Structure formats: structure tokens, C-alpha cells
Image (cartoon, rainbow, N blue to C red; front, side, top):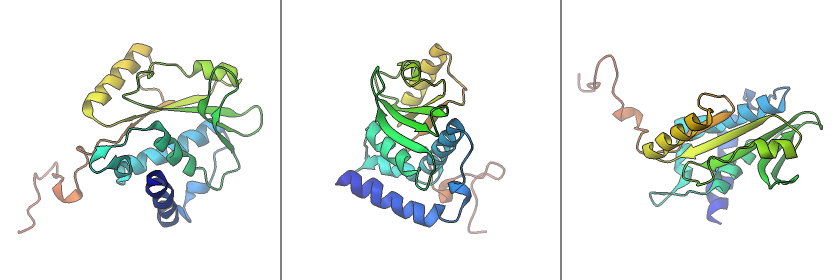
Length: 192
């Protein structure tokens, strides 16, 4: 019920208030590009529009990959793509498979930075689903988790790739606009 209230009802309001009538519902002609576009939209909401707050309950982070998966699934409203969760075509289930026909398939795997299986490669899933297109999304809640993820990505040779998306759900690095310093002038003086 907490998940339903936090994610389904709140996200439905987000869609109605922020997405209706925008270009969000225009689709790319490729499942990878469309999957990435929707993931980057979700990232921008989490990082820049206080969406990170959905991952906290009573000041503590809710660290469940399933919650991030639900949010991502909700970005696929009004789509002509076939979006399936926990698809298992052998070798275990992948979080999402987005497809348009049998030749255009993209896999999306979500991980928390704290997950001990972070180094697991999506390649195993790619072979089982007969596609070479996949995206890995990694959600982190602290600077130390971010550094750990960067180290892992460097070790695997994946740093800087567009098929690896890091999502910042830290709450201590998102000051309100009234507390942000103007880089050119220092602190704004509202009394002058």
C-alpha cells in the first residue's frame, strides 16, 4: 500500500501535471533510443524535480530496485512499444524488455549501487533474448556509493557509455534554489 500510494498515485499526478500535452509521448523509431529517452526523463525528474523524495520514507532511503522499476514502467504510458517486466527467456529474468517486433528489442536492467551483484553483465541476458541492445541503470544514495559505482564501471570498461545511466537519489546534494550560491556573485543579498 505504501508503494501504491508513493508511486502509483503520486506518479499519476506527475503525468497529469507535467507530461500531458508535451513531446514526452512522441516516440523514437528504435527501442534503444526510446528506452533511453524515457530513462533519461525519469533521471531528470529524480535528480532535478525532487523525484528523489519518492525514495525516502521518514528520512531514510527506501532501497528497493522494484520501486525504481515501477517508476520506469509508468513512463511507458501511451506507447506503441511492447514493454514487459521480468522477462525470462533463459538465464534468468531481465528487469525489462522493450520491443517493436522481433528484430527491435532492448533490455533494461536496474541496479542499486549497494547491490552486491552490480558487476553482473547484461550480456548474458542479451544472448538469451537475441539482441545486442541493452541499458543498465544504477541508482545511488550517497557520494560513497557513487565513488564505488565509478570504480566498478572503470574496472569493467563501462564508464562514460551512454548505455549506462547513473541516477543520483542523494538528498544531501540538492539544495533549494533559495540556498544556492550564485557562482558569479557569491550569496545573493535579498536585502539590497
